[in-house]
Amino acid sequence: RVILHIFTNISRHQVSLSVLVGRQSLSILTDVVQMFRDKMDIFELSTLLLETFVRSDAFVLSEYSTHEQRRCLKEVLSLSRKRASARSSPELDKGIACLENVICHLEGGTVIDSEKKCPYC
Image (cartoon, rainbow, N blue to C red):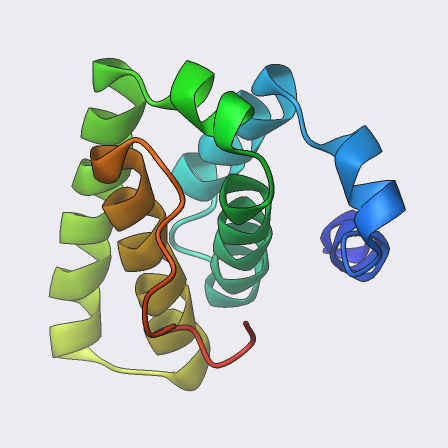
């Protein structure tokens, strides 16, 4: 949790963000989203950070946008939506909104300037 908060704060600065964003960091964040999808606060922070990373670099996005990554994130999104229908929470709802944006960007292959769904962005 603390590390995700630190990375989130660092990612607010464009110079620092460019150092953090890379193919490996995006893969690691996808793993974090998947592993901690049941812990709402970690899910929220990791999806927010993943969305920030995806929005920041179109080249990394094109490298990252593999079928396997999209499939994994879609499965997590599906499970999260089911969980949200059973019991909703602000953290889970924000995480789902960020994850929807990430998937939208990945499927488009480029970062799209659209109405942001995530209340943090």
